[in-house]
Image (cartoon, rainbow, N blue to C red; front, side, top):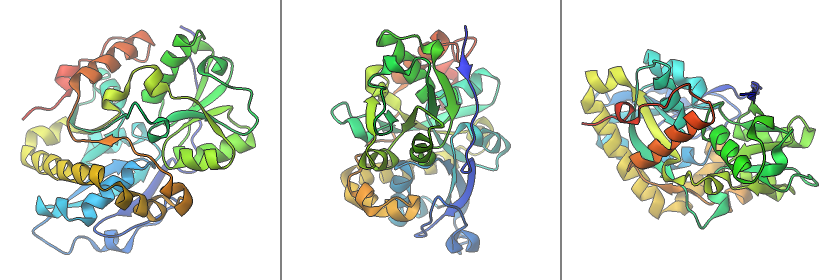
Length: 331
């Protein structure tokens, strides 16, 4: 298979931005004072989660602010990086306890021999809303109008082998194009707008609130590939190391319980999440106000994971189909 996949790491490849308690920060970098000081409560266990710049950061920050993690005995620190694939070594080594990821990242990792577990769901797509999730966008005046037009073009995704690569490949094929003629490069959502403007990429995958900013600047969505490829059942999940799930199942259960309360509250109070986005992601208040969100829930759709595994094998992302059952953590 002639797969064109290259690596383009932007300045945001790994941002050591830490957010804890009621602290907030910006994706431009820098550690918050609250994070540097620690929890100040010796009864809480310090745990870390790796995230990438997206509206999902706002949801989990809201849960911290509401005290849901403290209620479960946890002091949760958020670390922002470009994509989940770049954070896999930290998760495997124990530097990170948890990681937000598209389902493909832990599935690929386990297929390659890493000891990881998917411990919960995080979000699913809303079929009736285009701009709640990741899509492929182009800049003003682009001649790219559909997924098929991505043939021969350079398209950014936030992680190689991710839901972006698999979903876009499937959408191009379903639209009558050849996915092997698309060149994929790796780029953070927060960098897509600038790279479209400079012409370094022809199209880019981005999600809220960066998608809204690109559209406000004259760009447009040309493929809602999550819906086109019917991949919305488990768009984001939480992963942990297999070692942590075996050695300390109590902390896994505490985290999942806090996450469940967090996402249930965020789903019902989306304006509170929007209000956090300018501080935690550095987006404009105008873009934040227009941001739609995917459906937040800690429930895990295992059937959706099996669909991802099928497509990963089909598009050559893995040599063999990942074993979903052995990757999913059970109590």
